[in-house]
Amino acid sequence: MIHTYSLIHDDLPAMDDDDLRRGRPTLHKKFSESTAILAGDALLTHAFYILSNPEIIFSKDLSNNILLSIIAKIADAAGTNGMIEGQMLDMQAEHLLQLKNKSKQSTGGFDPLDYLKKMHTFKTGKMIKVSVEVGAIAAGANHEELDYLRVYAEKIGMAFQIIDDILDVEGDPLVMGKPVGSDAVNKKMTFPDIIGLEESKKYAKELVSYAIESINIFGDKALPLQNIANYIIKRKY
Image 1 (cartoon, rainbow, N blue to C red):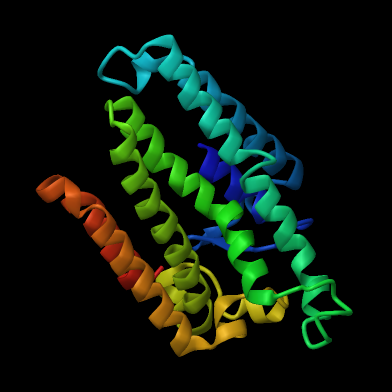
Image 2 (image 1 turned 120 degrees about the vertical axis):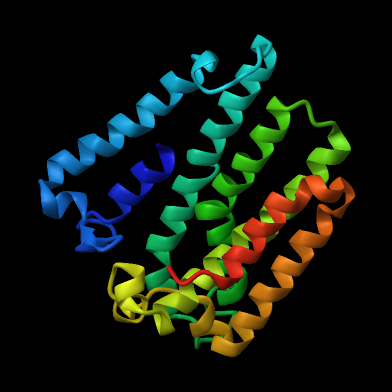
C-alpha cells in the first residue's frame, strides 16, 4: 500500500508528471488529480491501520513491543527520514545538476555520484531495507542475522535503482509499460548519466553479488532472497 501510494503521488503533475504506469494511464490521468492525491493518502493511512491489526497479516502472535517496533520502522522508512527525504533530494537534483561542471569549491563540495547514492538510499533503499528487516523481526531473527539481512537489503536496493536507470535508457517500452528516455528529457540525475551505461551495469552486478554472498550464512533458506537479487539484475521492466 505504501509503495503504491508513493507511485501514485510520484506520477502527479507536480512531481514527475507521467502519463503511463505499467502500460495503463496513471491514476490522475484515468480519473483526476484530486482523486489521485486522495487515493495515495488513503493507501498510506490504511497501511498503518492494517499494521495495527496484526491478525490480518501475521500467522503468529506478536508482542506489543515487536509490533510497535515494526510500525515505527516502517513509518520511519516511509517518512522524513526515508522515502520523503529521498523524494525531496530527487526534486532538488535538477538544480544541482546545473552546477556539476563547476568547481567543488563553488558548489559546496557537491559530488553527483555521492548525492545520487544518498538520494536512492533514502528514496527507495530504506523501504526495501525495512521490508526485509521487519519480516525478519517478526520471524524472531537475532541481531547477527539482522545485520546480514540489512547488508543484503541495502545492496539490492541500490542495484534495483541502477537497473531502473538503465532500463530508462535501453528498455523496451512495450515490456515496461511506459515510455523510455524520460529521465533524460526531465534532466534527471541517473547512474548512466554520471558513470556511464556499461559502468552502471558492472556496478549493479557487483552489488547483487555482494548481496547474495551476505546471506550465505542462511544456507538453503536464503534461496528465495538470492533469487530476488538475481531477478533484479535480469529484470526487463
